[in-house]
Amino acid sequence: MKGSALVYSPYNPNPRKTATYTKEFFKHQGETARASAPAIIELVLNGLKENPVVVTDIGCGGGEFLKELYNHIEVGKTAGYDGKWASCFTNPGAVLPTEYYFEWDIEKEKVPEFVWDDPVDLTFCLETLEHLTPEAGDRVLDYFEDHSNIVILSAGAPGQGGTDHINLQTPGYWAERMAERGFGCEDYLRPLLWENQAVSWWYSQNILFFYKDESNVDFDRICSYLDEAFNNGPLHYVHPKMILE
Image (tube, rainbow, N blue to C red; front, side):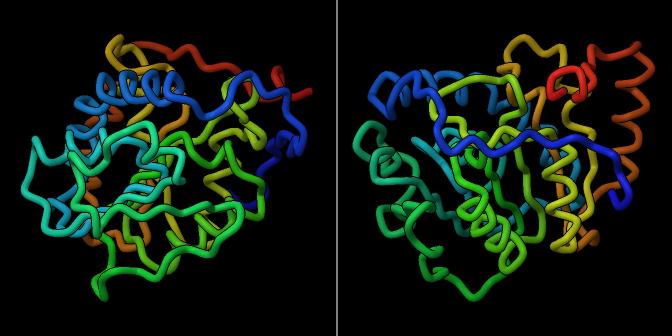
C-alpha cells in the first residue's frame, strides 16, 4: 500500500451522538450479526488451509460470530472482549465460558493480560474500530501484531453513520495501518458478500482478510473466489474521494 494517494477521513472527537449503547443498540447489533455470520464464517474458513484452534473476537457483543464458528468447526480455545456495557445487555456467557469473556474499555485500558501462550490463529474485529479514538484503535492494532496470525477486520467507512462512530475510514486506511504491522491483505470477502441479501451491507462494504503468517492461507482457493466474483460483472464501488472531498 506504500505510495498510495488515498484520502483519509479526519478523526471527529465530537460526533453527533445519535444514540448510546443501549439494550436496543445491542439487540439490533445481535440480530444483524446473527444473520450475517453464516456466510462470513463459511468464506473465512474456506480461505484457510486448516481450521483455527485459538480464536478471539475484539468487540464481540453477545458472541454471535463465535457461536456461528462453533456451528462449523470444533474450536480449541476462544476469548471475547467487549466493554462492560455489552455484558449488561447481551449474554456472552451463553457462548463463552465466563473466564474467557473479558471486559475491556479500550479507550481507557491496556489490553488485558493474554490468557494463553499460544498464538491466536484467527481474530475477528467487526465494526468496532470506528467507535474508538485513533489512540485506542492503535491498541487494538498492536494486539493484532502481538498475538494474531489472521485477522478479519471490518471497520466503518466515511459516510456510514451509526452510533458514536468517531473514526470512519476507508478500507485502504486500515490496510495501510495493518501493513505497517507486517500484515498482508486479501480482499476476497467483499466481492463475494456484496450481493448477499442476508449479510448487512456494512460487513459487505468493509470486511477484509489480513494475514501475518501466510502458511495457513489458501491462496489458490482465494484466487478462484476472486475469479468467480469478478466474472459476474462490475461491483457497485463508490470512489472514496467522492465521499471525502
